[in-house]
Length: 142
Figure 1 (cartoon, rainbow, N blue to C red):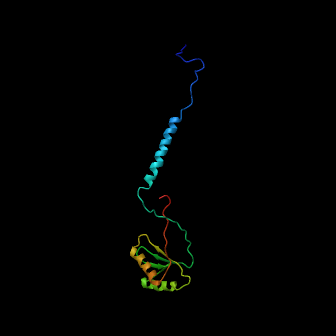
Figure 2: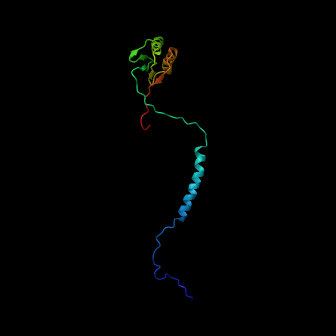
Figure 3: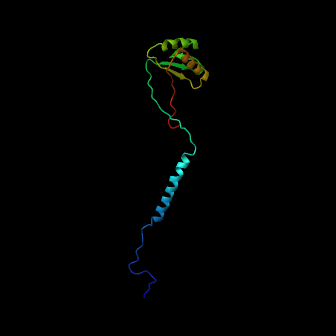
């Protein structure tokens, strides 16, 4: 029996293949861990998430636009309204129309809530069934 201690002739080639078996084993273990851990993390606290819907609304010519400025002044389109009682009288005439037009309220960002609330109360007293708020969408990216 002969034994060789050194490389034999022809075995001088370098093995350039990478053994991927340990890599695959590690990746499968990580995959199993993530598949088990992710459902636990995402549903740990039950909450009802809000559903936001962006609706583009076109202003029709028969819509009534009431504006409330920063000082609490009420405007029917561009005409100032003397007080809430005068607004109720105008809105009662609108509520008698068939079909009833929509009342759109434009409230200034810095207006007191009370001023906009008075307009809503006037709409309710006059029997208006369709009331909407005109707002600006938030800035893109923030």
